[in-house]
Image (cartoon, rainbow, N blue to C red; front, side, top):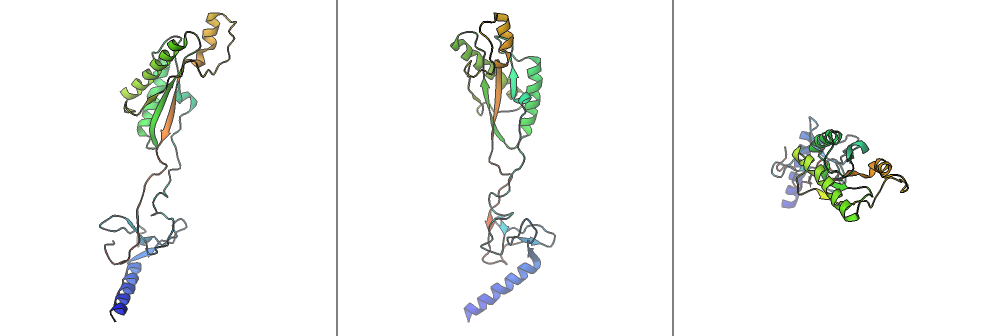
Length: 216
């Protein structure tokens, strides 16, 4: 008798709950998400989690890790590469203008976790000198971005690569001045972005065993 009475009360609660808040039947959310008459998802008062009327609802708008950020912050080649004068580690006015725009973009980017700063040098000079020069160039870029409000100093990774990855193919038979001009693209710093997990939000799911409890 008690079991019958409890079953009847549960059934009545379900009817009341569905009357006050209908299951979602929109094309994108057809997995028994409970919504109120205005279309808002019903959540539990205590936990703030979404409410569904079906324990086997599967993936829907309330399921953990299903709302994906489809847009991504991408830097163009002109934005992510900064060039330096021969044997210099100071930013040119052009480089500063470019980095100012990059700093503004990255400050507002919620999908970017960090930036890796990679420094390069041309082949002129000793390997050790060029490694040091690459590092100083990378540090110059890092310091500029930090001064302009982006990138905590602890999240940037500096990897000086010296002359190990040239993008030029200049003749060694050319004069020194000709080589310096030809090797200009090798005197650079590149920014590589690391992204956060591709989620704009994350929701827990609660499937009510007693639908009349703590819903709104």
